[in-house]
Amino acid sequence: MGKYFGTDGFRGEANKNLTFEHAVKIGRFLGWYYGANMNKKAKVVIGKDTRRSSYMFEYALCTGLMASGADAYIMHVTTTPSVAYITRIDDFDCGIMISASHNPYYDNGIKLLNNKGEKMEEETLLKIEDYIDDKLEIPVAERDAIGRTVDYVSGRNRYIGYLISMSKYSFKDVKVGLDVANGASWQIAKGVFDALGAKTYVINDAPDGYNINTDCGSTHIEHLQKFVVDNGLDVGFAYDGDADRCLAVDEKGNVVTGDHIIYIYGCYMKERGKLLNNKVVATIMSNFGLFKALDKVGIEYDKTSVGDKYVYENMLQTGNRIGGEESGHIIFSKYATTGDGILTSLKLMEVMLAKKKPMSELAAPMVMYPQVLKNVKVKSKPDAKNDPDVQKEVAAVAEALGSDGRILLRESGTEPVIRVMVEADSDETCEKYVDQVIDVIRAKGHIIGE
Image (tube, rainbow, N blue to C red; front, side, top):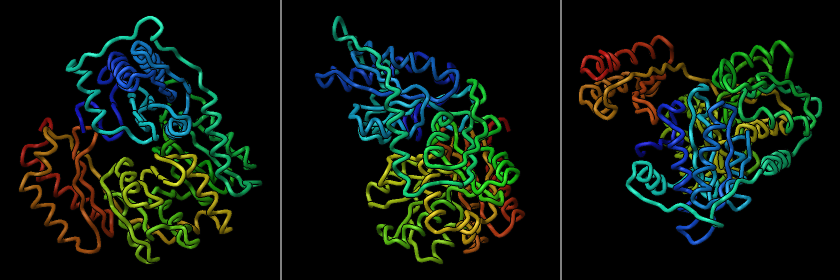
């Protein structure tokens, strides 16, 4: 990771850690790098979520792009996966999504995609960082070389058509609940489900610039759980602010996590002979119960570092077809280059309809292990993680858990935080071992403010 760009773009509080000036410079670099630097005029497509600051960053990016001679195509409020799809399909030089995903409204982020709709290469990101830090100089465009903006809402509409085409079944008479998190999917998701014939019930679909992810969406799924049960719905789906995540709720109100989704669709693919390599991709943070359930049905798995970026890299290298994270970032590599919440919900609907089973029955074989995860703010992530005494305590916990659980110590990709996670047969056991490790981190003086 670089100075500004983490595993999921340049993210921070708007006009504090991520400023208008940063956005202008990012636009300036991209417009030149994919344009005059290559002796052509660059074409860049931009989408944004519903945060108030997203409008500011949209115009700032456009200003920088045009000043460097690029044409900026504006998709307006749309989802991250839609930008990835249109970047790839409509032959753009790169794509930009303005969103801080599941973070609160006052945060924002700039996610960059290459011309294949994949997360931009590290080499290019480091060059952008050099320009932000005034280590590079690039020329401005003049006269007829100056760029323009182009309204490109048609790109969003084409993506909607693509999603509708993904379904093999009519959703007629299926009662579906959607929590669109007052975010980027609020104009898209219901239209897709309605077009496929579902009886669609939507909550949190009134964005005002400040309520994105606020007590709603995939990070607050308890509201969708109640909504599904109270209204007698067949299934519910919750997205995050930019709709690259999806979690589900079964007809009984139980949460269906990203790990459940990987299990359900992995089994469905295996049954149809479509699971290439007989393997799915998970992360080191996936629940222990997922691996136990996969072992029972004879499905193999790769484990990557946390982040859908690493999941997708594995899929590119191996040809594996489905992978994701417990948080609901699910990638179907045949259809998308990034996590796509709406696509994920359509694929779950496909399994329900094909197998004629309720979601609760599909998810039942995967039993979640109790898990406790605590975040510790530290002075130096590497120093805290690699401290010999901390490592010794982690090893001792791992030995005590044996094959009935596990411990994981990892650095956050975006915050000054070490995450300590334990999975075991009870919440009490998890809590005990997590606190033991944190006590050592504290005793060694790594925690901020202590």
